[in-house]
Image (cartoon, rainbow, N blue to C red; front, side, top):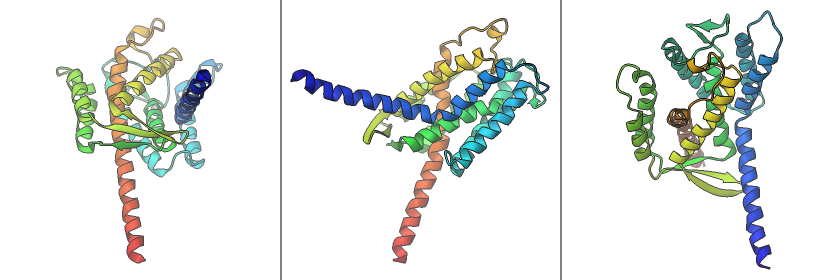
Length: 274
């Protein structure tokens, strides 16, 4: 009798966990497809078109597919486009400073950065947008202005620390302060759950680090210590990704707030009309 009473809640928890994992996988669809393309391109025989250039075409086709299938709406595509721009700027500076490199040749390559590189950041934007939809995500007690200000400082610090003192630990502390009490509410199997926003940053950062190890192993790009043979990416990158993901979340949150205000205004107009 006792065993049965325990088994019920345990089975329910397992189903919740599996559903959560499956929904996360669906949210990662663009990233999974992109990395699969990188892996497949590494296995292709010699072609007249450079691998990096093929991946640009593949990334564009993926973007069109997700939009035409309705997996991402116009608002999502706009956010992802901003992620492209932010990512490309990030790549141009970091590659010029030797932080990492794209050693293979390509026609669609500018200042050492292949244009497909920005699709890696677009994949992160796609994940956040799709997760917002699939989990019916809502940020509670969110401080949009303060969080956006710290996120902007985080982004700038990834450039400025090459010439000025690195403020990432200070910014990490500030991010914890401005997100204190902020939680992400989401739905799994009809049950509403919540997670501290700061914890979600860390968990996403961890899985981005795992993805980065896979991507560098497949030759998506190379860190200097990987040029003579692949080596695991240092765990310090978990912290870097945990900070950088705040930029994407802030961007998506802005569009959701604007959409929410528009819905409220439309509803008010309907009521007035009645």
